[in-house]
Image 1 (cartoon, helix red, strand yellow):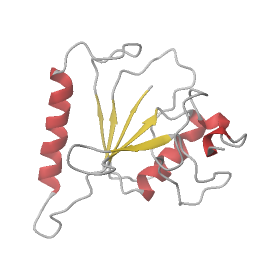
Image 2 (cartoon, one colour; image 1 turned 135 degrees about the vertical axis):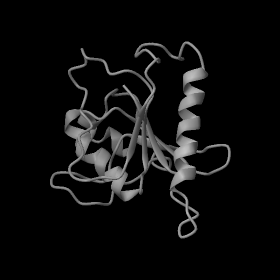
Image 3 (cartoon, one colour; image 1 turned 180 degrees about the vertical axis):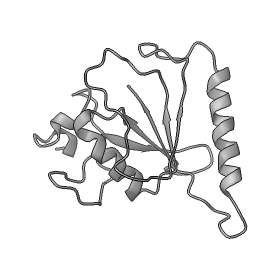
Image 4 (cartoon, helix red, strand yellow; image 1 turned 30 degrees about the vertical axis):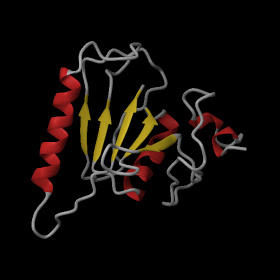
Length: 155
């Protein structure tokens, strides 16, 4: 049985039948009261790097702590939201960090919530360029291989 199907984790899944495979998901190791190692997320490869992305759902109010544990445990520097906030979604969580966190949060604003694909790819490509430029600015002679792993989520 997948961890996402366990009774203790069902409330952590925004969509009940979208459950990550055990071998494809990141595990949480930072301890938090009332939390286990489960988060509804999966690793995704880029063209150049294995497990470069972590794709997850928009956090629910009760899973925000898990998102920040994911950021901490996996040394995330970027969080990318691929759509606009749905102001009518009563289960949306606000991404307020539990303390000072050095994470860049970017949002693609022209991808409507209910559309499978954005209306055009220009803004998506611009977002990728902005991320690449920021990564290049963060590199220096002391730390030429910064962690470029990022979280990507949508509603």
